[in-house]
Length: 195
Image (cartoon, rainbow, N blue to C red; front, side):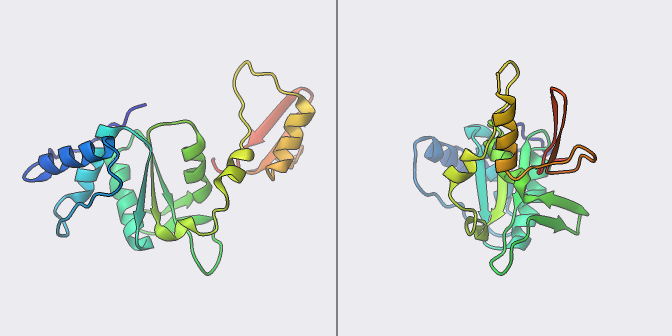
């Protein structure tokens, strides 16, 4: 799916040139670019246009959690039909989720990580820089992904062991997040990162 930018605004002033130059720089592999502007000058809107133009999964890092939450809200409004996720981590303790009181939104951080691994190309993850700490080795994360596709044959016992290895718990009585149940040849899974 392509990024679909929804906005009542059109680029004006210096924005069209900035969008063109930044897009060209990304496509040419320029390792670093800087967009300057005062508060309220439309930098987020400019970057949203660049994301739409390059049409690739994007990680946006913010220097603090407050700005990350603000940027998440803005990018979510620019890309309501795409996967815009929020990931904030903390140095002093592990917190597996985030709460945005301004919008009464509860966000699972695992959702951001799973969106990146979902195969979708229209993912934007907005995060504080502290998210890079304690994430672990990406290859370990990939090794725990269980790929299920229609028509793919799976050995039932191997599949159930993989679920347990991925920290899912078998519960044949009550199905809750992070649990699975088995009834005959049917396996029901309640994903840990989604409702």
